[in-house]
Length: 232
Ligand SMILES: N[C@@H](CCC(=O)N[C@@H](CS)C(=O)NCC(=O)O)C(=O)O
Image (cartoon, rainbow, N blue to C red; front, side, top):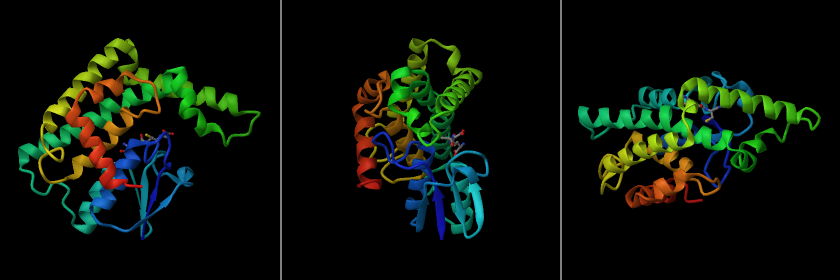
């Protein structure tokens, strides 16, 4: 049996982390049975979620989970894509994970109002006496990480200019397709959906909502994917 370790649904999203949503869709897409564990962050092999335990083997990181499914179960997440399409799909996936991810972090962790609406809940389990210290220290560390990455050195206006270009690029690749790369679902859909859904979450206040809604095809794709993979 496969166990998927993730954070759990928050903020009106299937999971607080887009990487966990991606991993869960990949498991579903491959038709694998799995159970969910929301309480094992402490055992994460890379200190991050998601990870899976598959019959005693632990695999950390959503992309390595994908590779594990491909290798162990022979499922081809690129089925039907030629080399050029597979290249575009991989580039789009990494633009979501290594670029838009930082915009999501910036929106949720730097902005005071969004921090109170979102990440602050992760510290509720900490003892009341030290909760403010832990909350402040982790928040400071994450905001520093966004700066170290580089995105955090831009003004908000500059960040949303860059993010807007990335959203437009995704909307342009999607075009009138049913799925991201055409009429058939493939691995990249798990990632693009997860990040578009997270970045446009109505729970938070962000210009990203209007940027996504401004692309009718992308917003409709997000809604279709949500209905298909998380009907609950
Ligand atoms: N490259 C990883 C990224 C996973 C990741 O960044 N997870 C974040 C949540 S979005 C996490 O677990 N953060 C907790 C921490 O850093 O302490 C993947 O694809 O799974």
